[in-house]
Length: 246
Image (cartoon, rainbow, N blue to C red; front, side, top):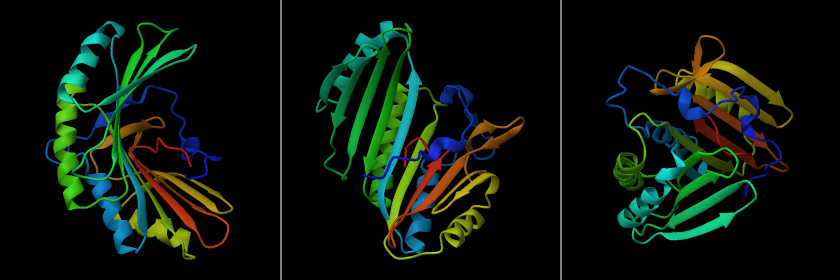
C-alpha cells in the first residue's frame, strides 16, 4: 500500500461536488473513448520501462434516498454474483457490493452512501481496479463501463481514472514528468515541488473531460512523483483530477 502521509489532492482548491462542475469538451466529445486517458498513460509508462501497479476507474453520482430500494434491486438483478455488505456509523450508512470478474484480474465495487444528517443526500460510487492494462482489459472495461453507465449513471457523469506505478531504479523524476507533459502537450497550471516530491496540475486538449480551474480556465490532469528512500520512485496520474491519496 502506498504511503498516505501526503495526499496528491493537496493542490486542488475545489470545495465542490465534482460532478456538478464537469465540463464535457466539445471537440470530439462524442467519439473519444472515456478510457483514452488511461490508455495514454499506460502507453507512456510502457515506453519508459515503468511497471504499472494499479489502475482505477471511478464514477460518482448523487440520488434521492427514496430511490435506494429500487437501486438495490436493480444492482442485484443485473449483477447476480454481487456480495453485499452494510456498514453503519453515526453519520452514514455504507453499502458495498463487491464483484469479481473471471475475464480480467481486478475488483469491482458499487458503493452506496446514505447520510443520516443531510437527508435526502445519497451517493452511488462505482469503482473498478486492476493491476495491469492491456488491449483485452481495455475492451472488457469499455463494454462494462457502457453497461454500468447506462444502468446507474447519467450520460455526462464524470469518469475519473487513476494509474499508479513504481520504478525501483534511480530515475530523473523531473525529466520523466517533463516527457509526459510534452507528450500530451500539457499546459501546466500549478506545480508543487518539495524534496523528493513533485506534483503538477494541468490541461491538455488531448482529452475531453475537464473541470473549471481558477476564474476562466480548465484542468483535466494531475500527476505526481515521489522518490522514497533508496532508489524506489512512485508515480500517480489522475484525470481529470487525482482522487486517491499518496
